[in-house]
Length: 597
Image (cartoon, rainbow, N blue to C red):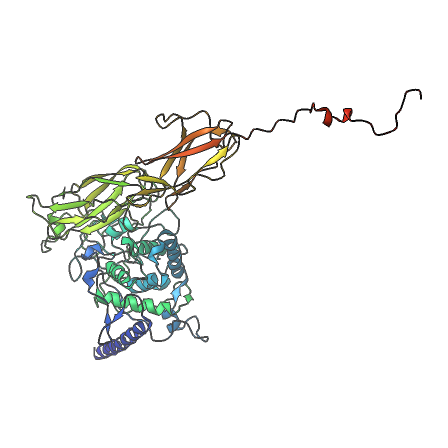
């Protein structure tokens, strides 16, 4: 015992020294998310600054995590380091795991370039959550050899999160557990899960899937991870703890200095966890012997990639004697959570949800959680899900958003942003973790419109009959004073100002086959609201003609076109009748010639 205590004290002293060194390194490098206060210490902000303050709103449910800090030596191995070198294994990242982080960064760079997600952040979180998938113990496709499960979140030293997936992901039908190398709780994985390795499944135990999901999770709400404040919020939303934030930032800075690839399965395992315990069968470094069903497993009548059948209850995790019999009641000593008291949801005064394509909805969805007697329930997670044939999203590009109710029981969803697909869709509000009646909201996306059209080209547009107009027609569309991009425009050569019918003479356009057309549809302004029409031609009819442009929203512009008569050719000169100029009548100056002379 004395030896154990001494070893523990020495390790704590070493950890303190490493932490101090990490603080100095971070301060010197001005790492994102870290500032220096008056005393030279780190000021990372209160954990409550994260938007998801409730335990089960975080990706991990605020599950325990590894607290080991980076070593003081360089992340790059020495030239003499061998394959079994402990320091090289501690600093390196297993090959498949590293590949998954880099592929996730590349995918987010394409999908959400404004997020600026560095793969080193995923590596830092993966180190803290699972020790890089337990040192890279993964199969060739990136799936962990055995499931990685956090302790059951039963409120006994951890957050209280009752089962939300019927044991599908964690094998526990009483309480949730964080799952996989990035430690997602089932209720978060349900909407955040991604298919990172292209096998058609979203498996939290696969490092490619989990890394891509973590990237999207960190990039929601439009966060820019190159910004210190947004980086801090994103990390805190993953696990709402300032100590967690500091540990992740330490590894982030360490990996930014450089790292190296090591073979799968050769990485070292962290030693210390934030809860300072190692529950049998529950620690991320000590997996249960009975794995849950894999997401994506199939059963008769169920398509591949859908939710699998529930796995058996976890031994020691509150399961019944029969693995196929779910518990009927929670332990009597467990107090009810706010979620348990919700009887129904009510609309909290949401107005009409209408927006133009590409624009943000002015109205936001508000939902109130109530007990059976109509009393407000605070601290309840409300999940808003966009359903229907639409490309509309919430801010940050996600189709699902989870918001915790405030003291008045109201949760306000993030702003909706319309895509390019017009028509109606729905947003469903439901209680996360409870099967109570939800509230559907109808939303409508209308076609892009312009309030005004103005000419941007030369004032006069002229051509001669039978010729072509030298200058094209150029216009700009605006809406509420701003450029109206991607607005549909129709151009018609009309009969007169009072008759919008298509003219059958005068100027015309040509189609792809060179045929005469006097109405053009399918035209759209560019991102700056500008539109240049195709070349105009004139037939043999001279006069003044009108080109009318119309848009959705009622904007109309009439452009005057002038066709001048073709020049009349000069007639050939008449023969002269003046004898003095007629060569045939001029007197001869030569000798007289007499016939026969």
